[in-house]
Length: 72
Image (tube, rainbow, N blue to C red):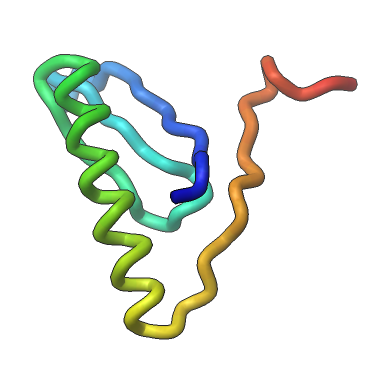
């Protein structure tokens, strides 16, 4: 499995944590704790990649890196 960047942040509106994978369109998950959100998004990632493969949808290479990791 490819290593994709995962964002995890607290959502006041949802009163919990959101985890998303920017390189995989609409791949996100919710959890009451950061670890819950991470575990759920890893499940979502697996399903996203399986569906893309089964549907012959191109699987993007990991590219997203937050600005704090980019070298200027």
